[in-house]
Length: 302
Ligand SMILES: [Zn+2]
Image (cartoon, rainbow, N blue to C red; front, side, top):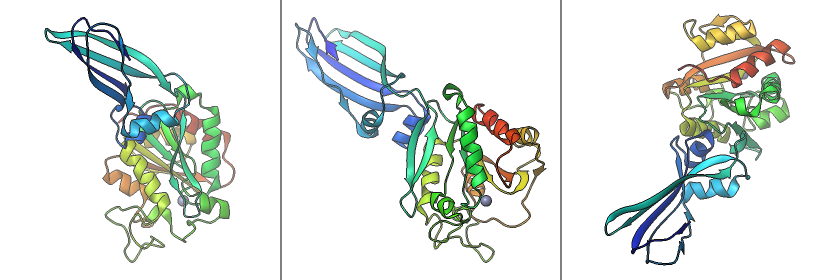
């Protein structure tokens, strides 16, 4: 930032990124993100060049962002002995305006658990392949993402939560834990929990999704499973009804057996309404892909 002052003045400059899914994850919370700042006294006379110093998580974001058109605000305030002496408020290009892959964590075997983040706030988080033997959930999400124009993406999408299980074609993660029983919901564990892990959130894949929920605070979470062919949710819930209509699957209140420590229960306890979409087995149908494309491109009502 270059500033000239007629009298000795105090200059404060900040570079602030707007609230978006990307800044929320970078900062670990959904507010806008301070990227860089400087505060300095400038003597009168010739223009002074002030170095903006990157701060905290903002520095990591700037370092990782590919050039693009995500717009940050440059705010400069100048004061001298007479009071406010001027200011600048302008847009600065710093990073991507496209969906941005973010490594939310790593699996037990070291595979990346990747979330695709939209540039804007993400009111919806969609998670596939929670169970590794349900590859159709990941295939359906990949197909829907290919059909979703980048500018229309409204959801954060984890196509594969359980990459080790998917690679092995097994339900559980590499330590034999059912990730959909490992979330630290109040009902975690107990005699009816099958393979819940040695403790709540003991598995790195679980913690990766938890970090995303904490940062993004999505209003809604949709978890994909297979092969029951039902929408698990409340019949009064608009999102459940919409998914039932677009997929042609019936709404059911319960899967019929206990699922303690599930992603859906944990997210609900955190205030995010959840719908579990149990697709049918086999390759995803064109109708399912169309339904998911519509879901990813539409901000859900609260
Ligand atoms: Zn499942």
